[in-house]
Image (cartoon, rainbow, N blue to C red):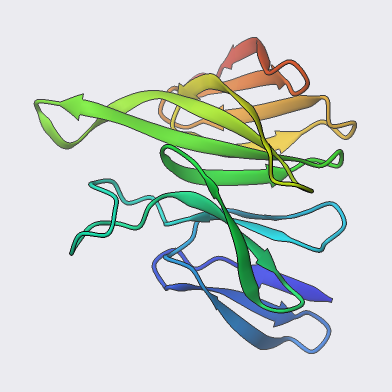
Length: 182
């Protein structure tokens, strides 16, 4: 049985043999945040790079372009990158084959080098063919995502707004926003 661990600032994801408790491979990615296995276990989806803000691209000192890295755990290789517009923290695969990705958005602010939080985005991909199914605006700084057992509802906990958004995953409509006392 294969396990997987993200490594925030290390340039790899660790693949582990869970029965033996040994590291079996290091898969190169530009730092990583959350990860999720596809329902059948044939793919690992990794939010990368880790949440560093600043210019993205290929220039010296630029952070790598954000995107979900798709890893085949059998071959320990990155097989695809699912493009996102912003840095991601959480990823979650539903039982029905949807990949939920929480994008953290920042906007310029005159009093901060990092900027300030803008509404986050829940972006949804298919776990089988990696098609982008759509997105919906959520609260500030999506930090955790889960789904109902039937895969119909997504729950996005947003740290900076202290909210949980409930999203219908077929229509990508936000059904309600729960305000969490601080």
